[in-house]
Image 1 (tube, one colour):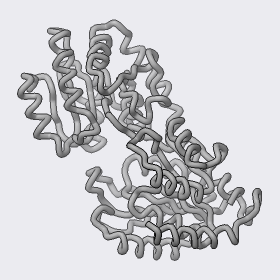
Image 2: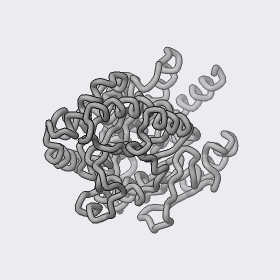
Image 3: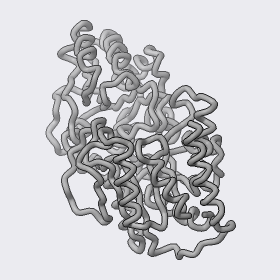
Length: 403
């Protein structure tokens, strides 16, 4: 750790020595060569950076993808033409690459491109500190993309001190929402350097008018949840709550569809069997985006029950499909996306009765679920790829002026 601090201190001394005074920039706000980084491309990433490249075509955008695939998310991307330059460092997932190998090829790519500005997705993701260090050595501004919030995990003093030091090396940030902005401010970044719009999806893909004609995967009405089957997604809690809901709702009970896969699948299957829910809880597995669309099109309500979640992009997707949402109040998107009683409801992900009551309220007609869904569709329109593009450009302009 001391060695890391020594390296960081040397880098920042070099950076501060050549730093412009406030308001100085030798570059115009166009014809900027920008390098953005991502662990792996995805439908989200393609939608965001395509919107940026189209909205601001005077700039040159390079997207460096650390790997072509990921062990965490099994996206299968069709190799379509995109309006930016893709630089894929390896056919291997980033998780399989050694830190030394990854750093070496990443530095080589940066030296070849020679960007005027770099954009990194987080500081804790493997490989993302390399472009920050490169920017310090080359006296180029850097922008942080972040959806971390303070209550994501237990925090320790020395880690927070290190993160604070790192965060303050960026000239600007683009964050997901208000909780994420507050956390960066606490880490020492100036409020005026933080812009909004990071966590968005391609809303048009999920619009009800586009997907309503898709064949229904179930004949019955159903609640929908989409998750990796890992502990923090709280699926055992969701299934247990659903079992009690089913007993209370009786013949009027909706079914439950859990899309996804992961390490907890055996426990989930066992729980479903033990609770006698095999005909009521459906497990279609991990589905690509186009395979998910019929489930969004015909669901009656979306549930996201995570114990911990930086944001929760599936909530964006559900709202873009015109669904009312029941969202854990621990999700990073809750504050910005959920308007209580208007487009959905929040609940404590450790209070089963809260969730049961909400499921009964929505499915038994105690609220107008159609009206909730319409409000969700209207609210999510702001959180679009254009919102990302505008926010990123604001961050770029701020970073160039205040580098």
